[in-house]
Structure formats: structure tokens, C-alpha cells
Amino acid sequence: MNYLLVDDDPAFTAVLSRVLQRRGAQVHCAVNGQQAISCCEQTAIDRVILDLKLERESGLSILMAIKERRPTTEVLILTGYSSISTAVEAIKLGAINYLCKPASADEILTAFDASQAAVDVTLCPSPPSVNRLEWEHIQRVLTANNGNISATARSLGMHRRTLQRKLQKRPVKD
Image (spheres, rainbow, N blue to C red):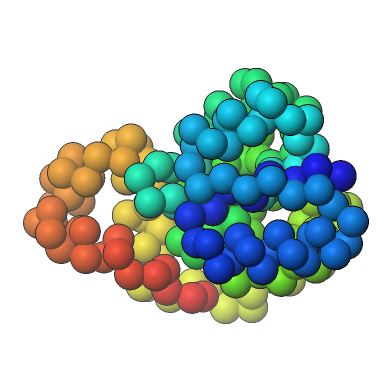
């Protein structure tokens, strides 16, 4: 099995790469979309583990480019900045699953098998917090404005710097 890890965190990439190699996989690594697309064009990649938020790029645009070139490649989105809107958008664009960081190697490999992943889903008995709902709403509006911070801030009726501060924080846990 050939894996492509697309993440801008070198420590995470190194650890996950070693774990996958120990399990018999061939692993290629990329830190940006250009490297990822080049690797997909030059190598037969079976599975891609793609970070949603790279330093200067959105994982969703990389996902679209990979699926255009290799429609049968399985792509898993892995992110520390999760929201319902980005999860839905990733699945619409062709990702097979969407996981929140931190995720173990076993969870990542299980996520590629849709039947096992569906069985392991646990439903939260309580509704999400107001802070979590705010985070998800901001992500939806940001996606609707194609990532434009200024347009999103105007839509939300807040100052651009306030929005930037909110986006730099990790999302609120449920």
C-alpha cells in the first residue's frame, strides 16, 4: 500500500511515516500542495492523509486537485481545526473520511475502512456548547466567502482582527 502524507508539521509526519513503514506501507511525504500533486502524478498512490490547514494552502483545494488526477485514490482529511462545514465540504469533494487531531495510527488506518469506522462512531449525549457552535458558524461563513477574512468579518459584523484572533485559536471541544 502506498501512502502520501501531506502535512506541514515535520514531527507529526516523521512519526506517522515511521509507524506506517513498520506496518509494511510505502510512505511518501509532502509539505504543500505542489509537492503532493507532483507525487501523485509520478507515483501510484493508494491512500492520502491530508492536513486540512497547511501553512499557506487549504487542504480542500489540494483534495480537489488530487481527485482530478487520481479519482480512485482514497483521501483522508486530518485536522486540528475541525468543523461540521469543513467535514461536509471534504466529503462532498471526495474524501472518504475526516478525523480530528490528535489521532492515533490505528484510528487513521481504521478510518480508511468505512465499515469499521461507522461502527466505532459514538454519539454525544449533550448538545454542543455555544462556543463550539460559534466556531462552526465562523467556519461556514469563511467557507462561503472562499477563505476571505475581510469579507467574512463583514458578514459576521466583527472587526477583521477579532476574526483573525478567533481563527488562530484551536476549535472548542464538544
